[in-house]
Length: 505
Image (cartoon, rainbow, N blue to C red; front, side, top):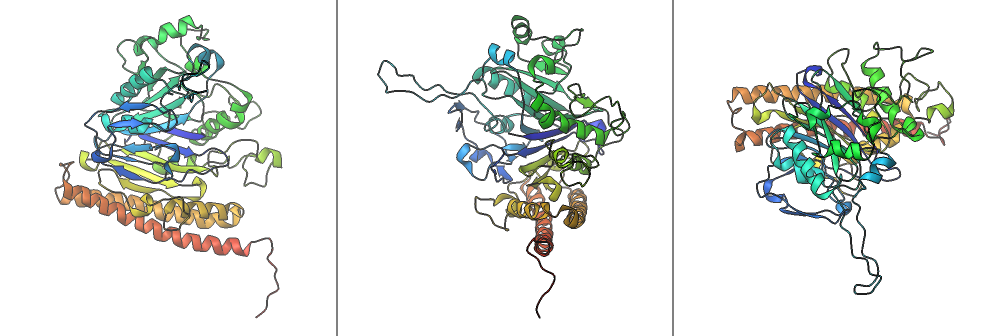
């Protein structure tokens, strides 16, 4: 599963909020339609069984309400993807990572294996239950945690007990901090607190490039890990560092040729946009290129980063370089050499914002978008609600412009072939809808403050006001999206290959 994540520490963001954002991308050649919902405690399972791993886990009996972005077609499981719970803790799960043979030889994945042969026969091999994975993690963790650190510890304990069948990166945030957890083999994990003044770029690679094992296995101020991680590293000769600083990327990650065109290029693209003056990116001897294995995990940006900056870098397609598939510069081979961030198979984007300067009752906002990011827009929704807007929640397998997911996908498919002709309409739509989103958030904050409803997170009237505000902005975006679809359809129709200039009257 291809995804791209960016994490922005609170001192690096425009308003002091930690920001967690991830493009959830489907596999090549398939779509995973998405919806945005609220899961109330009554709908949260107490006994959970995964579809892929066939694993049953008994869950606590005191779940909190939370938002999620599950698959609209549940045949492969829930895949909750991203959400914020009633305690204003955010979780994004997951960024698929890479690893190496040494790690998997030491701690193999816990993969499901169906039974083989006839039960009772000498050659019968019973079913082997698998571990947990991206399908499961949000559902079995987010409803039960009250801080980002608690999220790391709960997921870490589940990984140690049940194992996993894949390498994943998971982000947790609250109003103060962001933690990033990476799985290591079948049962091990590491986690690092994102520095407040930095942003982190994560393509589909194990990313942490420095780690304090003493802190992780001691006080745990900035690092956490499996209790036996030091022994695991030592016994399996995994530490490749020549100096005193342990580098998990070298120990647990991969540096294959395919990484360079699929993974590292995306981190390079994001960092050269957010730190354009940090180094000579385009000179004859650049410090880093798209094939560099030593791009830093975190950087201090050159200015504070906004919601729009996050959306922009998660829509990148190598603008201004020969690798841009929509550009006329470069060769045909160059334009399709590197995997863009803004790709055709985005399922959804969630930017999770927990605002420390607002009351707990209206602190958290989930900015959501569907389908290919260069062509879509964000809808901000307050998460302390009982329901989400209909156009965000009604996605089904049937293609319908009643669904913002499907409308966004249709617009992208029509606009892609005529990018330079249609992108001005897209940009006007994005500016208008994002401005309306910011305005609606401000208006709602002011209205709640004036109504003195701000200090009671579980007040039903307050939650209904927040839900109504969500409906208002979603309806505005839906109307604007319908209008954009009409314009894009008109322009694309007039640019069809079978057009002819002479017409009859």
